[in-house]
Figure 1: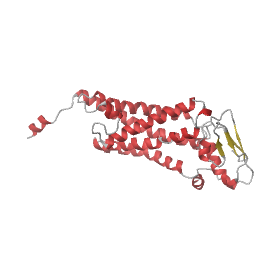
Figure 2 (figure 1 turned 30 degrees about the vertical axis):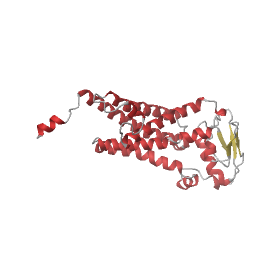
Figure 3 (figure 1 turned 90 degrees about the vertical axis):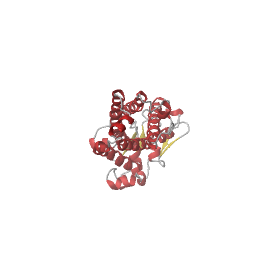
Figure 4 (figure 1 turned 45 degrees about the vertical axis):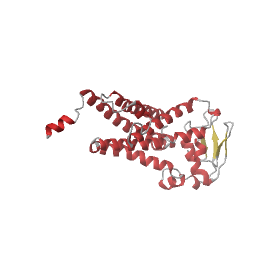
Length: 274
């Protein structure tokens, strides 16, 4: 009976075993750096790193993590093309559900392709003349990276479960995924909720007037400030940024969030003690 089963079940070749080991290792590195990319991006974009350490966040670290995540993710996907059993084809790696692929593979395909698109457009957004593009639209598209990371996390956990590695990656997976999820949740909370949590300064309790100034040489019109405080900052069709120089006290949590989120640190607040 046992001999008959062994005769029926194909024995994986040493070549395929090596390829699958490469796929597994690259997947784990991609998962780790992907979660770190998300967490670092939130911390640097909001300025929370600067608030805690007193130093400017190194946004280059976010780029390095994103590039490493993409590289290892691409290696993970391409490695399956080198299997001798030909269980994966090019279409299966590019098109969800192609060749009868499962929902797990579809989540990985869509997540990786969206992650690549977000990374490429983010890089282009810094190079293209910002006055000729809709900065707010680029920023909104960049936020789809949260959705991409979610799909890739689902793919990773389902893959670990299907391959019998769930127990091995459980602790590490939870350890790096939890901070990313918590930071993402804090990122989308209203500024007033963050004030109550002590993560933002309570600007509306200050009695002294506050004045806003924007360094035009540093401003690249990404419209992130408009996303944070739309009643104070408005990016015009010609790329010019218009803003209230003396916002009301109720707007201060939003204004301070916008100043922290500005990637170029072009917004300066006078009279806040900052």
